[in-house]
Amino acid sequence: MDCKKILIIHESEEVRRGIHNILSHCHFQFLYASNGLDGLAAAKYDRPDLVITDVSLKILDGLSLVRMLKKETKKKFPSIIFLNDKMDYNFLREARELGALGFLLPPYVDNSLIYTIQRALQQPVLPIGESVPFEHSLNARVPVISLAG
Image (cartoon, rainbow, N blue to C red; front, side):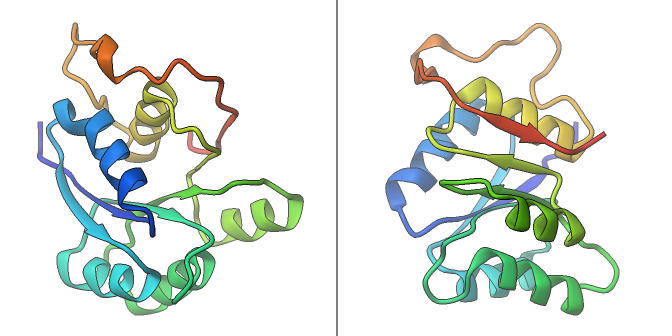
């Protein structure tokens, strides 16, 4: 399986680390940014396969980041998953128009996160027969909206 690059853009180091911990056994190369401007630069330079970004970034919000990335990335536009505290119709419509393949509300639970990433990358995240280690489970409810496939 190819080692896919995932760029995680979130202001909270705790959230970035938490997502990394959930996915650490899935054989990804991880890139990180703490704001939208740094995330845009990382996406243009490192060309990730997937961008997981918070919508409410202070320097450059997630929707603006994806708009700019779409304009500047001619050949290979990465899959996008948005992290957001609330889902409203206007946000969902705009994000979908920009090409978002998934949306997650906190808390980011391992199975929901892995399922959404798997759908966005259109490939299994875990090798057949492996499962998420129990210690990574956050044991919480999570609404998931996945628009991929």
